[in-house]
Amino acid sequence: MTSRAGTLAEPSDLIDPEAVSAAYYDLIPDVTNPAQKVVFGTSGHRGSSLDSAFNEAHIAAITQAIVEYRAGQGITGPLFIGRDTHILSGPAERTALEVLAGNGVHVLADAEGGYVPTPVVSHAIIAYNADPQNTDQADGIVVTPSHNPPRDGGFKYNPPHGGPADSDATTWIANRANEIIAGGNAEVKKSMVSPGRHDFLRGYVIDLAKIIDFEAIKKAGIRIGADPLGGASVEYWAAIRDAYDLDLTVMNPSVDPTWRFMTLDWDEKIRMDPSSASVMASVVARKDEFDITTGNDADADRHGIVTPDGGLMNPNHYLAVAIQYLYTHRPEWRSDAAIGKTLVSSSIIDKVAESLGRRLWEVPVGFKWFVPGLIDGSVAFGGEESAGASFLRADGTVWTTDKDGIILALLASEILAVTGKTPSQLYTELTEKFGDPVYQRVDAAASKEQKARLGKLSGDDITATELAGDPIIAKLSEAPGNGAAVGGVKVVTEKAWFAARPSGTEDVYKIYAESFEGPEHLKRVQEEAKTIVDAALGA
Image (cartoon, rainbow, N blue to C red; front, side, top):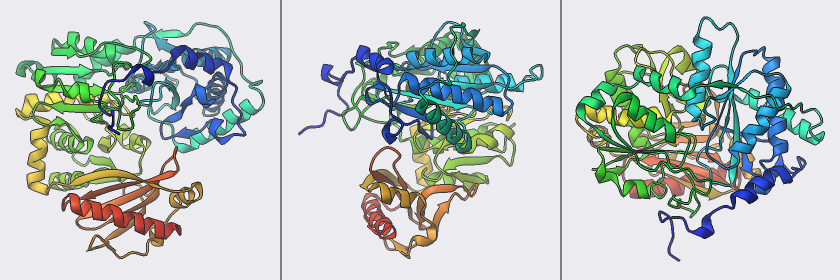
């Protein structure tokens, strides 16, 4: 059967918004069922109301738990709240506002009642806490499941550092929320007091001049096509165009809870992942109309970069180019500022770091690990293989501590304006210098018990000494950058590597692999990776 990936969604693919909204209020979760409990992943609690995994009881309890957590931490400043365009984000924001008001928390919501991207909430928290006139500390909530399908909802907490909460905070909040739900939400306090208002858009857009060289973009006449993919950045792109007088077209300003204008992802589901060629098919089709074309997911924490000569860039490729450019065009950054990457990102970044004479700071999956370095300037760039990154302002101070797909999209135009070359052309130059790696992620079946064992696996449990004919030089279960557990293993040779991590949502484990020896070698690495991991798991 022919795959429909990359083709326009059909009526049968679309959600019934009314049914999804009704289920939010009508279905009551049973927290003795693991599938209906509050569980914080790397980016908050996510699920669908239709599965009793994201309902009013969840959000009321999570918000009450956040109120108690912030009180325990002595956080007394305002709480910034923003939502994306998912159908469940509106009801969830309303629930959260009622609980926050019931507990007397000073809340700042969007001045126009509009959508607020994830990085904009992070930016607002950081700006408030950096102001010496403010003696208290602000934090925030973002209501978004990011790039997830239209039926899903998401809810995440950002403490005063502005980035994703660490596992200590999220574990406490999730456990407390489940206790509250188990008690019938009797401990939840609610009120209908209206929130305070904050001009998120103006504050963020004006500040962009401190991190992006708009003069260079304008002078070079770069023609930009920006597609919000129906997400929260839609008003922001128009505002950026007007504020900086750019030749910028908002390719699709539509917002529709069904996302009927999207092309289907690899599994024929509607997703707003700008790093997916299938999702970005309609954007790529217009690549010759612009010098740089970009996409963002629903909360704009991810980016997709399209060039006329190269099409949609692999996220790893663009991260390598962005790093090479930024560390040679930001003279005010600290000379000892490291390059941050997750350990499943391409090792061409390692080679770029070495050529720049910069320290590589390799951490587990999850943007939260970059937060301390971005705050103190010791890490000037932090990036994930899944097309999420942020970097410092031109003066070397913190911009956001959450992923910012808007600045990464704008950076592509700055790179072309300043160098005269597209990011695709610059990546080709990097491969000519360092080699051309082949990278892929695949899934392998695993039971819940095997996934649990994989998550606790030590590098010492790997008995293999060779991988695809080369000696193994490292077996890692802790990240080299900060010594944190990776929740799996990474095995490295001089020519290739693989990493295996359990999926948080499915009965599979993910195998990330890369080879500098071509596709056939990569396939061998993947096959042997499965054999090595299965042996360690006793499969």
